[in-house]
Image 1 (spheres, helix red, strand yellow):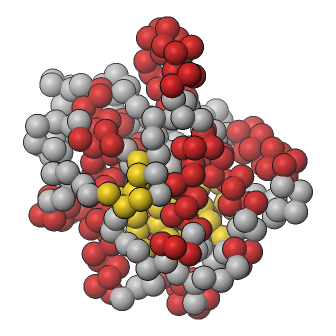
Image 2: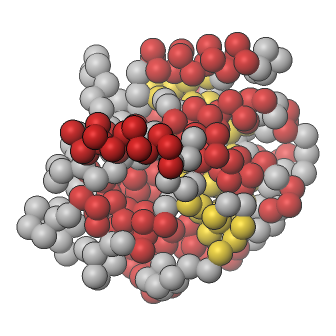
Image 3: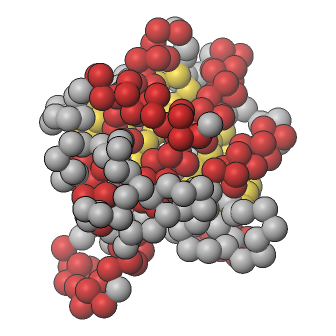
Length: 302
């Protein structure tokens, strides 16, 4: 592996695990481009990094929001496909290499809502936006890996909640149907989708002999604002949660391990928990489901 200073990365970074991941990557000499919801969020994270890591390249932040939108709507950044496309165009316009791509931004347990594109919001935010962004930046990663000789790494933040999804795994025919919607199961569905995507993309890149690896991970149950949709329940449980949940430093640890550590060079298509590759449970091991989801995702974006 080449020195970290020769690498650049793209990560969702407004708060929580994303912000901590940016700090660690900057500490290791990586040039970081952050996807953020608002200029103020980007500046806050950037100032904190520069304050704590004076020698770091100042991170670059790009805004994810709809064209003409003056104020970011909570959770409507990665869920907007036009916003994702614009972000990718802007990033490519920077003419930077891209060695590491971290898919991190997400929401949890939201009431039934459709995104601006008419897609169930958790599926759009946690999965489909990342699917699109990764595909739009993948050619840049392949070229960077080939020209630099440094392995490209896609790191997908999933969750053990993939085990708690709908009975059919992915509700292909009822994805945007309010009937039968359960926030916790929809969250599990979106995380299952990310693991299936990781596995399928890994297979496709191996077939191409591309020098880019893809792995997914469970960060643990982390005390972040991802559960903001729980409302008063979150407020009641918050004091207890602070005692039993992981901090963002622990939550970001495996993310950074997969992004940087030489020990996982060449490792692809695996699911990690606490730095270790672990066996997945069905339906996350279903290769046909992975292929079906990939084709379904492409059709949603057409």
